[in-house]
Length: 118
Length: 118
Image (cartoon, rainbow over all chains, first blue to last red; front, side, top):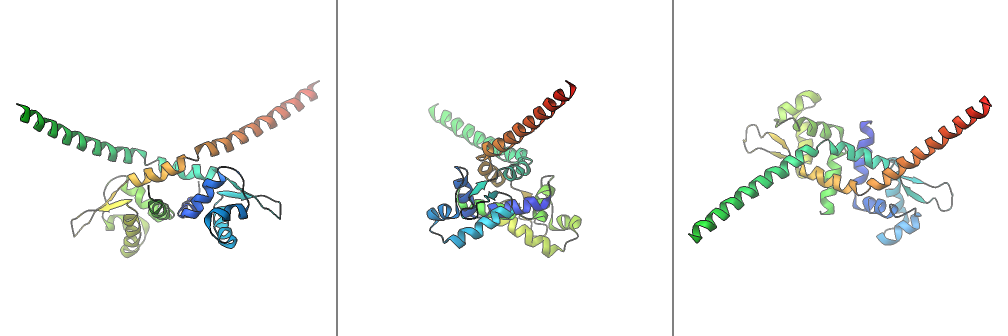
């Protein structure tokens, strides 16, 4: 997958309003007016975010000139997740190191406890 | 997880040089000089990218004042992947629709073939 696609996808996701718009569209199509309502944001403000999402291929717009309903296009999210999944072994290793450390601390604590009982 | 964390993580990932730096660090720690070498980029240019990655918590720097080796910190990548994973059913649905469409087209083609044989 082209690097440009990942650039655009990650950049589009780096904004809480745009992520909230995607979460809303996951529940079904919505017009700009419907999307603007919960955000206390002007329609032009929402439209600007929609253009970023559309350019990144994360949403598509209907052809009805009046409503132009927005729809989630999730396949680019898979592309982003596939890139991240390559690093799975590294964070699993980080969590394993943390588990080992906690295990050692716990073993040390219970050992101390036993000595107290004796 | 705070929305700010996702903002910083996705913004840091929206650049091909920064993604390449993470890929290099996945193979082991590296100094700024070692990281700059394959990119035909100045050390200050690489340092700027490293600051973005460090602020996003995607790398850490060693304490050795001379070398300050960079190290991959992968747990924030997991946070980003967890966010994306919530959309898995939507892209699976998209691929299913495509499969269904291809199945219908194939059935139509073989049907036409049968009619030709008759």
